[in-house]
Length: 121
Image (cartoon, rainbow, N blue to C red):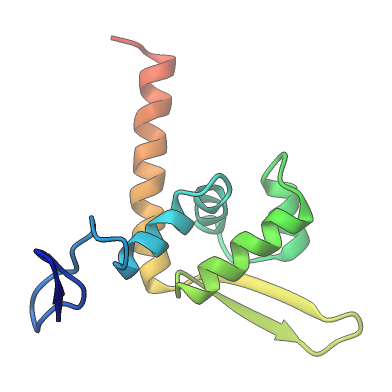
């Protein structure tokens, strides 16, 4: 199925057209690179965390923004969410395999930026 020269859905073995507004990869990239999404993924690289542990590890994030970021990343299957039926319920988040791959790339990018800022050439 095409619309103009851009591919909406890939044929077997072909990639989505990322410059098309209907490309699903654009939504995922938007969530990953959002103001808080990148920090959630990097924080979870250190291991599974509960909601409040995540909030404490990411300085400046509000509960509302953390909840929105987590919801989007769970929907994109970058992170998983597990609810323990206790009172009050305890919710734990962790990286999926896809999330680990993306998180590794983000951490590498962050480390390169950090090196460049600390040790400019």
